[in-house]
Length: 195
Image (tube, rainbow, N blue to C red):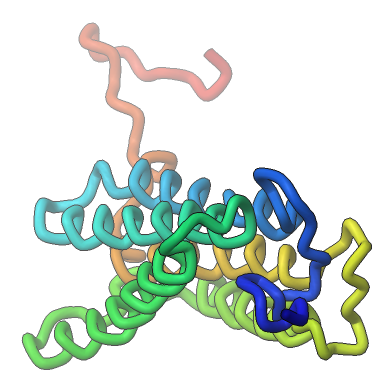
């Protein structure tokens, strides 16, 4: 069986032996887990309906990361499904959520700002380049290198999904904690900026 026919074989990194058969691709997959945890933590202040959607998105990111670790790591039975299913569902949720909001006449992308939009575009352009560059048949492929473009795809795509979650779930017009006024002390004296 050629490398490309094996699980992870199209992702450039040499397939070795042991618990992490593609160590760079396996360990870089943990970026999705970190992104999922960040999305869940950020969701704490949302209203109940939005919080549920954000937590589902966060859970899918964590499952994407864990499935990818299993896919590029021990390659247990079912690894391909554990790798492919969560990412497919998160893409579906990412596409359906704005359409569903549009149909219901709700704000489609409540967290949209030009800065977030630009960050999202940069992340996805870099992710696409890393994904293409990380294919086994790519001229950038060096199976023995520690610098694996597919591993970079994991890192940049996880950032892209985090930014997308900010756009999908967080109201950009709501003041952030740092923008809220500091309450005056109970004695009525004003607080100075230096104290």
